[in-house]
Amino acid sequence: MIVGYDASRGLTLLEADDFKGFKLRLAGDEKRPPISGVTFVDDGNVLIGVDLVPTLPGAPRTPEWMAGYRAMVDYAAKKGWIDTTTNSIRAHVERAS
Image 1 (tube, one colour):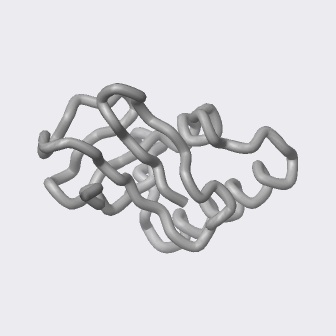
Image 2 (cartoon, rainbow, N blue to C red):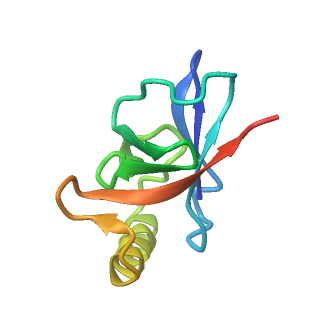
């Protein structure tokens, strides 16, 4: 699953059915653009609100998808990739070419 960001379009969800990976793909030259719902931990990692992802354009609105997403979040929590203070999931940052 990829959360894509482009300053002109904002956030979108790409590869929504891939529950095995999670990353933020940034377009543009800005290292840490201000993005609502996203907090930069450092240049290579961010926290993305767990409740934000299902609201993004590109997110399926089906019970099956929500169950898969919830299972992914539960797995991430077991691995320590959920920030419980902010209810955010950790994601790697990928720069779009």
